[in-house]
Image (cartoon, rainbow, N blue to C red; front, side, top):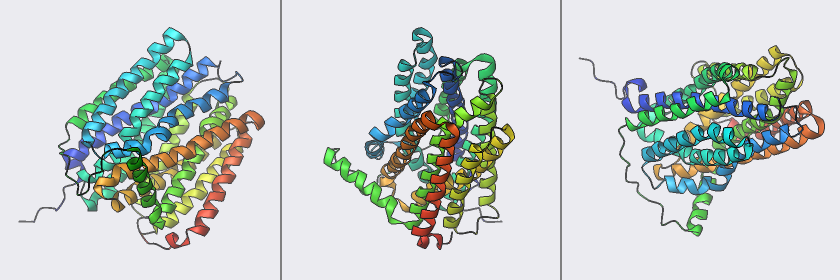
Length: 417
């Protein structure tokens, strides 16, 4: 008789299958929410014709980012003390209730300011959810399967982007942005059901964090920063990810305005199609990384992704034709996939279980800080010189970061996969 495999295929493992399907459904709902919020602001500003349009887009991004900047380092230390599955379930229940309240509150007040308060609370839940999910994955999956698991989890996000973006644009343009938010509230509850089916008991780690004090938290933040800086491969991966977040911040403000002003009719269907094309580019990149690109040095792949991200931004700035917008979105998707998958795996492999919450919270803090600076700068540049100038500036900055990363992280570029 043939000996059994040391580890069953991932989708035959109950824990991974439940995590993957739950994330696929809830991430699809989150893509609906992003489009719905853009549609809400479009309706509130008369199809972005009001002078405050870029300001409100910047404020939306800031509200999404502020909880990470305020709470992420401390949330990571709190997550390290808790049952990770319980953290995920509680966060999704709260997110379902909050996203359900957004359209109800706006319909009563006809003001975006109470909506921004709810969104702040919504994304505060995400501050706890994201590091807990990243910390839970290596506790559910055996080490040899970890990169494959992260690839599949990234693929869930890619599929969610494609399905949620295409379907979301169609739903919103026909039934309104509120319908998309109600649907997202339901997807969070599906994720709760999937998470509850996971068999998980919190392991006892060798060194538990000490009692929470301000000094202790600051020391834990320092430990997280030291961990992510220690390995040059991790440094290059985070540099790539930061550049992708920078590009995303400019696309959120200047890219949205560029798309809407180039459209013959207002709506979010075109934006949904472009997000789906971006997801297709990420899917193609993920497939290549796990086939022909598997033997290439990770660092060189990440450096190439930076160049592609800069080129995609410049292409976005150079045109008002939808077909070229789609080409730029595809290139940006190709650039995003390596940063997401390789960074996740490197941090999981190089971090002790009792520290993962802090390390991933620190990563989130750094990335969202970059995004906050990007959307703030994009809002100012767009108001002063227009969306095309903002996109050109972003492209030049990303290409500059790519040159700096290649020059200063040369040892990492020689490290094989």
